[in-house]
Image (cartoon, rainbow, N blue to C red):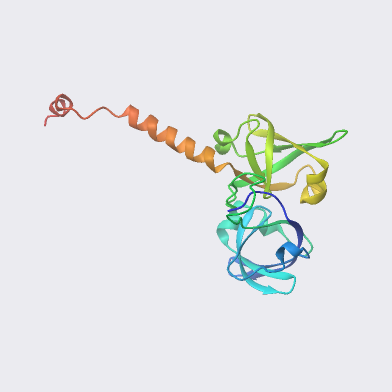
Amino acid sequence: MFTGIIKDIGKVVSMRPQGAGYRMAVETGSAAFKDLIIDESVSISGACQTVVAVKGHIFEVDTVEETLKKSTLGTYTAGTPVNLERALRPLDRMGGHIVQGHVDCTGTVVSIDKKSASWIYRVAFDTAFEPFIVAAGSIAVDGISLTVADVSGTMFSLSIIPFTFRNTTFYEREAGDKVNLEFDVLAKYIQKQLRQSHTAAAKPEMTEAWLRGLGY
């Protein structure tokens, strides 16, 4: 589990084909990753990946078909900057929100407006995920925990402060770019409970009279 607070901007060193997936090598110079070990989970621009090798400042992960299908990782090449976060420890402060690193889909940056002290990003997303996003709610974009400023249909906006702009890959985003989206897991559970409650309410109560009506 992660919180969406990015600890470093790493750099993809290589993407070696491996079956239908890739062996991705990522370089990080941050002291926060100096004791990274094999089998540890790392969020790479929002996608939870398992470390399979560590060589100095470079670690490797195996990126499989399911991840490639739902995220932007398959488009990466040597030199691509990526947001990095290590898994949450029980004693860490939760500065963001609960982020699983399970990318739901990709969104598209529609526009970027520079304000005097911030940037407004508008992102379009798949209509299937509309129930899971609300204004002032949480969302992870490329692994970054952010607050939704506004939602209109299948587009939401984000207000990006200078610190986030400088210390994540937002600084290189342009209109038309794809981004990894993970919607709030709490919203997903609530939506499931509501669907199940609605289905249960629609079913007739099994009484003796109801059974007689069916011929029993």
